[in-house]
Image (cartoon, rainbow, N blue to C red):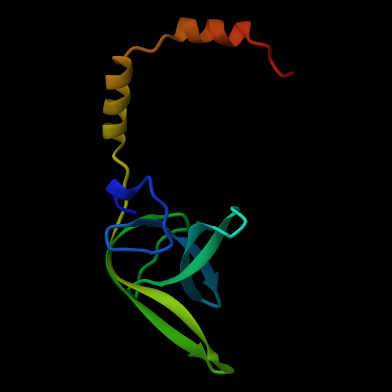
Length: 132
């Protein structure tokens, strides 16, 4: 999902969304999908797979996050069941999402003034009951 919508979950994928790829290697071919999380009627969260098609020659590892720049939805039917349509998102343009570690460090330093109280942290650990 886009940065401004990262706190929302929705079942619809839109341009600008950041999604995590799930990779499946089968019979010499690479297949990708992502999961949409939604609530069912009972209020339980369920994961629904959404099939993806990336440009030819794309070889990304499992768990890669991408930002969608352009896509369209497509469907196809199986030869043995022409009444069952499978939907697929054909992603035509995307960027690989890279977290800026330097930005995270700068954020952390601003919150803590760059100081870590290791002595206070050690006292907390010693004074707590250890589980073993």
